[in-house]
Image 1: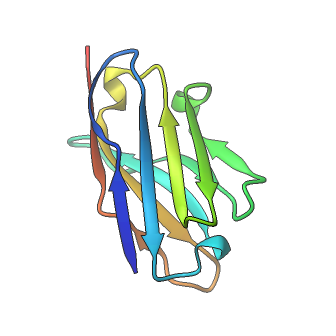
Image 2 (image 1 turned 120 degrees about the vertical axis):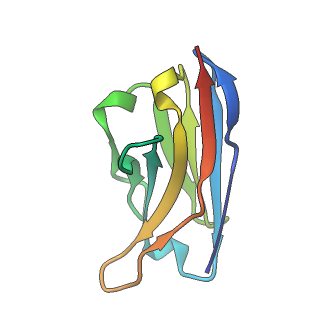
Image 3 (image 1 turned 135 degrees about the vertical axis):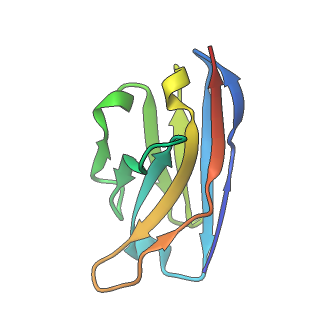
Length: 116
């Protein structure tokens, strides 16, 4: 199982980034995909999730209206479009694959830094 997360970086407040998490080695279309983040000194927290067919999207309140999660099952990739970024969005962002009765997988993380 492999995860390749990219798209993180340094951006000014108000800017945008698009994170990608390209996966292989498991049946991507059978998994719910999520993004989590962990800021320095804080616990990892849920950001957004997308169901297997993209029919159900969920977001934590602090990113609603600014972030959009999407997926392409033909490319085994999940995305997180982040707009109107704020300094409090600074964190390492991780993608997660979860399915009932199957192993859970995590990516290695990509750093996002939002300067004020």
